[in-house]
Image 1 (cartoon, protein in one colour):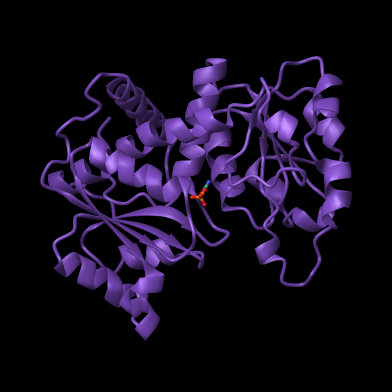
Image 2 (cartoon, rainbow, N blue to C red; image 1 turned 90 degrees about the vertical axis):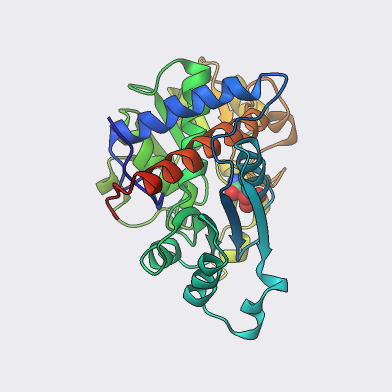
Length: 313
Ligand code: CP
């Protein structure tokens, strides 16, 4: 199979084979990262621009490290100090970055659909680094990569995603990716944080965290996104931690040795206890490390597709 996409906008549009191709390619790049010289010339002469309209630590740095490991030149644009502050639109910003001869724009934006919009208005590659509540494809790919690395497979795995499902692009991308690869996904949260008709995406809904964890091989704990609580509808932090927080006490009641994941940033004492976050079930920092290999794979594949001029977009 050949990778034909010059953009990566979401996992909804990817086939199982395409997801597996990214994972296989990330495996090879992980091997590169274990070498004494952690660098390959795959993107030499290419320029990657990180265009971030929202704060980020992991994703922005991870894309920068990934691009540098591929020998690309990297430019980071923080919108706070760019002409976006003078009213320049996303499309004009993208077209100017293209005119400056960049090859790939990595976009984080607060609006769902921003990456798709940009991809339709520039000729260069666009990689979605998180758009509103919609998708965060590279986060889900690195989550799936970590699950596969730790548990040996995805097919048939039971994965519980707990937390603010309603506002979570990480949840949506994980659901698309995991179900395509044959995992059984349960989402768990208070009712107000579960979107209507989420079952139509092929997941099971539970409102009881202990029940949702009981048979799970892994739990992906989501951050409570208090900044998105427009109607002041979220449960109080103390109440949430008591009813849904992932604590050592909860894990000790389980028969399975459950894998604990979190995309970060963590709210310790709200959705996860410090003891669990730093404990032996946690693979949270390994997820961060795996993000480099996964993002190397994505940058490499989209650049290759663009070069071959065999795109589907
Ligand atoms: N997981 C994640 O997207 O983290 P950042 O917001 O720090 O990029």
